[in-house]
Length: 88
Image 1 (cartoon, rainbow, N blue to C red):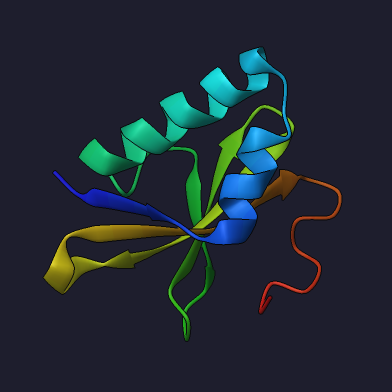
Image 2: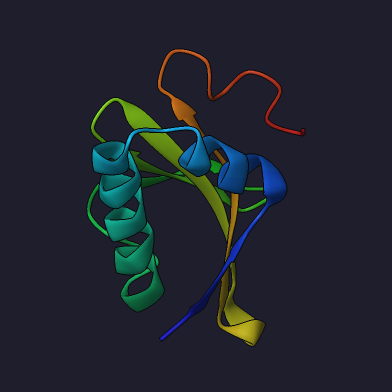
């Protein structure tokens, strides 16, 4: 089982959502803790090992640190704009 670390931007996004959306996103993040490569995930940038996980109209952008058994959730956002400025 992997540990989960939420970057401040991801945490703020979750907190700003309705309870229903918060629960949806948290459920998806918990799935990542048990399986960091679920069927709806996709490698975005091989150099940075960034992955995308779909949750309805939202996308969870994350990195896997295999040696530490850690999932770092870098960003969460609507599918239309989550990919802009991924380096933030």
